[in-house]
Image (cartoon, rainbow, N blue to C red; front, side, top):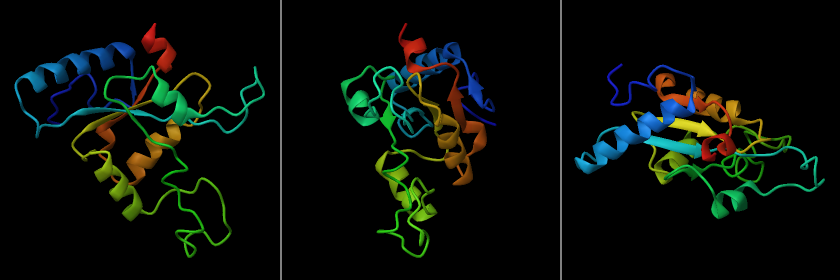
Length: 162
């Protein structure tokens, strides 16, 4: 595994310290103007299936992402925005089930839009209370992203910001 980010390569779970080290390496890489090299890309995968227990209100993770804080250069991916909906893919979702994995063609288009390549390291994180980050990890791996380059950050965004 040739990777410019050795603290990450091959690890499913990465510590906040691993993330900080990779960020420093990436910063050095950007100063050397090596844009075609693999990048570390942070994915905010915050998504909530139930209302917040303290307010009994559903949270809006996309609004929370926009308002910040978030990891540097992070992208937000909503599992429902790339889901196989009955309206777009009636043959793949005839029973109109929610939150279905996207077909590979839709996932590929989404990754192109997010400028994520298979050689990039993807670090998936979420805010406290979001429990679907492993699903985002599984989505990337099942769609063919190199599993040595897909990572779950231990802890939450709140742990990183502190």
